[in-house]
Image (cartoon, rainbow, N blue to C red; front, side, top):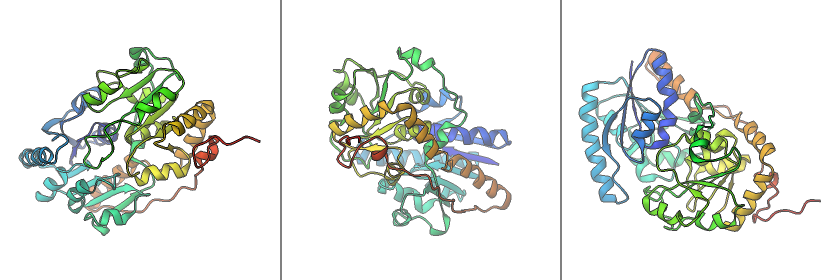
Length: 377
């Protein structure tokens, strides 16, 4: 069977790499398409994945997004007509589902951002099997056009799939001049995303001066963001793609105003604070409720939480990993669905079992609702 996988964002490389490897092991032919955006091709090269570059990201404007997406659909259509895949798989790709639908190619789509309404309306009506994290309200997906008979919740989050074949290496620490457990990783806001409506100034600009003095590895998304953080002497901003999973694994703490790197850190057991300034995803709220994440946009509260997490680093890592062990891995779910389709021509769409693991992060790290440290008795 020939399986077409469309990879349109840099984190999706890690999401799909395990699926690609496992499909190839079982004799399937895998066709990977991508686009010019955010160092995507460099990450694919680093992972040794063959691919076709089809189109580009349209930038921050609606006009640019529309033109780039339309051009990419046209180019993808020509390629897919020639390649004739048997199945299409994607994660938040706006073009692949419409091309697959137009050519009557069965499709599996994974979405984990219910706030990306415009994008979801271009994806969900054309997807045969929709996989999504269980904490997302199915109604949010149905109102964007999802087929109620083609939906399957996953009791986990997408970044668990990123750990496929992961073996931590300290090579990235040597490249950046870092010591294990003696630095913090940060990621700025996704200001180019169509669902983001926050301020230009990053919350992290006010957080950094309040943190303990240690190196901070920061990943900006734009040249403008990079320039805003150049004034901080302890901030390192890599110039080229680095092995980010090992970097997160050995970090003391992750503080991110986005989503993917935060959830990768949690999957690895690294204490994590979210500073995303907009509407929180259902997955983010769920992870906070499960006790494996803290969220605030108040710099003082973030600093207090960071200090407490650093104090409890070892035991808190164990706590996070214990909770995460009860989740489903989307990689396993997708591979089972592919196997089901190959054998019977249908998808399973079986609901997952729920996990009883939960906790309260504020209690665990000694914080109350306001973010202030509780008195110990």
